[in-house]
Length: 133
Image (cartoon, rainbow, N blue to C red):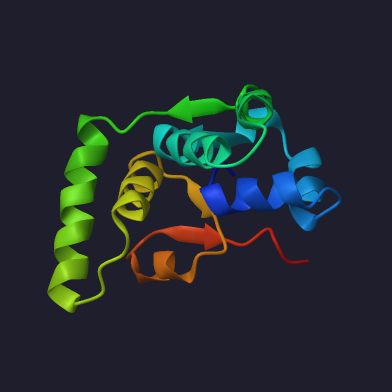
């Protein structure tokens, strides 16, 4: 199975060494894990918000470096439009960055690893939570 790890899962991993996320990452091939440009942006922004800015940015870059990163491209844009339309029609919209992440995940047929329950609103999106055993 191929996975895209959401921002909150990477934050959990970076803050809680020895966590279930770390165990799952160790047990999963680097080739099975992806990130995306939106997750990169969120993590780098978060790293810049606090003290030791350079160290935090470097830690994010080193952590994500081994993994393939997927862009938000035209195919994902089409999927985004479809997903957003459905969610707005149902009155169940999710955050703008989460919509981008969901669209990228669906476009590539991946499973999203997250502990954000809002993603459950997205039809056809496979979701797993690695933060719990």
